[in-house]
Image 1 (cartoon, rainbow, N blue to C red):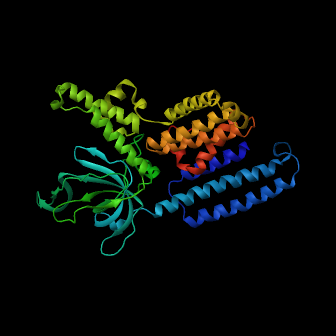
Image 2 (cartoon, rainbow, N blue to C red):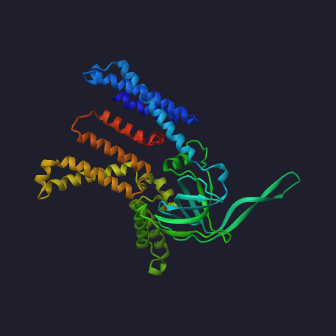
Image 3 (tube, rainbow, N blue to C red):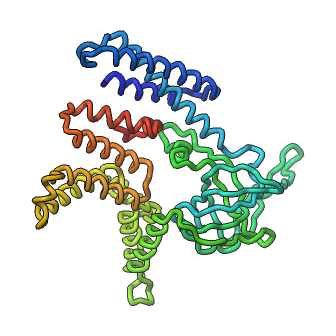
Length: 410
């Protein structure tokens, strides 16, 4: 089993090391050949009546491992090719596009306006155009600097572009799950090439965001319009309500009787509390982030896999304790032992916690690993720890091969 699991992980890693993608048909061919070899190995395994570990010939183990590595390479490349094909077409960059879609995440308030994710349902310029399914938009207020389209001569040989400014309308109140119609201007996502710096493109790739842009809300544009509410992204809407309630309760103005110094401290505390409760890290002030980094506690302010694992461990203990102490526990324990109930309850409660904290990619990987380990324990078999770890690792890579690119993977 170990060679097969490791082969899949290594095959996926091999594709991630590619500097450029192959043609999608090559990945499909690699997957097809690998599938034939996997079927051949499976037939040989069924034909052997003894156990896999003791009697399965090493040659067939090698063939199966290479086939699984090839399958992982092909499937990962195929997924990357399909996703890349959905990117924003170059000819649509910088153009005004009418879009209809749903607010897909909690809006982030800043000094210059709003920032939010938008799930596109329809898009058109004069005719229908195809956009990525998920984009990230900014809705600025006040004067906003746009692309320069004129220039002035500074000398006989050189010219200097003249910056253009547009007066944007004040952003309206938007909530997750609302359907809106608006005019946007988009561009492809580009990160910085600084060594060992934050990989912005990889981050947005994992989030499913394939374009960024801003809402056009000048006097010459069709004003953004709310079409209605939907049932989608209900958890995001609940998170937004809780975050707003935290700020409302903890942020006191001077008119409420607090001094200006105390009001600033309380407002900062509100951002920290909102981040810890809902996972909204952008609620924390930038100066506070500088303090947290300088004191070495920045990792405590973000809900990570460690937090979710700790929560699952505590929740499993509480569920098992309650399972034993109910008046009807004697009957329940006959059908489902308390340790097993604790495992299931811990995973379910951790899943709810991860969903409420934003259901980020690291949280999804953590829940998947917790579920895998719990299922292996519930199966009744005594697996060595390294097999359990490798199994969880392989399953995570099957679902999210780009997890291998994260520093905290494993």
